[in-house]
Length: 83
Image (tube, rainbow, N blue to C red; front, side):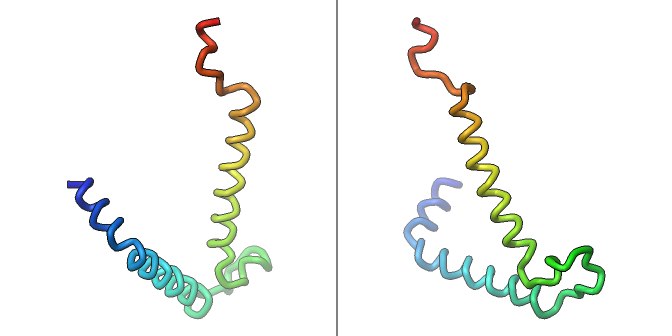
């Protein structure tokens, strides 16, 4: 069942991307125009889409740090135990 859904979406990838971009634009518009920013704790929170950008940048940083950390010694070569 899930495989059929993935195949269905993969065949319509361009439409899926368009729909995701429209949803993202609607959410950014909602954040910028309709949310109350009176109780923001910092000046940056008053910027439209601040938390979306903050979340994306944080995710990218986590990915790069975990890759760097993995290369420091967590990951081993395939023949590590054969030596």
